[in-house]
Length: 351
Image (cartoon, rainbow, N blue to C red):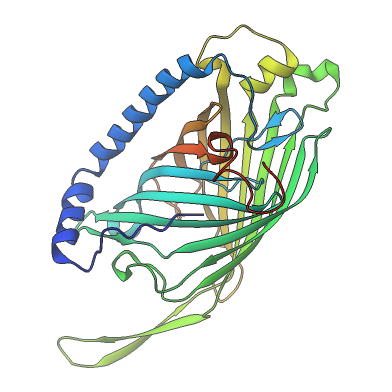
């Protein structure tokens, strides 16, 4: 899910130049500034939030499921990610630094059904050549919570994502065709383990399995040889893609409140270390079996009204890349911030 942001039009030369100056040569500096801002926000809120232990967002029984950075979470809620910033050097064109700044918002229509919308600004800085930037395709989605079992700390949801082709900039490779992505989501806490394994109870596993189905099986483009004037037709095939995401978490919050109070100081008492796995495997049209993906170890600090998190982005193979990247996120719980107004479902309940 990503939010749509079009206040700045890339079709205007002045705006495009401003974006290039702001993001291409200084993307790393902006990213560090975001990390610094997140750090100070954590420090401030730790002081104000330490006295409050009540959370309402993303719960199944006593289990709090944080919003994960690299894979979608299983619960339906009112939330806002502003922003999510990532940067990594990909193997394209001999090495291209890709920096993405995205905004995501989710809104509950009923307590069990919500919609999502999002948008991303991407900056591509190749090893050789001109820096390009632009917005990606607008992304929409819906999610329905099928099951929530409090005693076993379990959540199961189904969803459908839709990337609207042609709404993004072709300069950054936004597809001209649309893509449907039916998905199933789950979350399972291990608080129901026996007492002998009590220090494993803070563990939780969340995951998503989706199939990205493009509306076009292939795209044809015509290229002209400048020297001979001959025209060549290039066909790019678009396979269906299996997308798998998992997050293994260990909640210090759960350890302190449900297992044993370790008298840990702030901000350590609200940390959730985790490892995420984001994998993609084409299924047909000559590309099947070429799995790419990343392993993302990191940590989330979760307060009552928002959370901040950061992860490393580690490619799993050479097809994905050879360089380590970073992702960081500032995420707001709108259902806790505004429980009686914009943070409540439109129909069927107060929370």
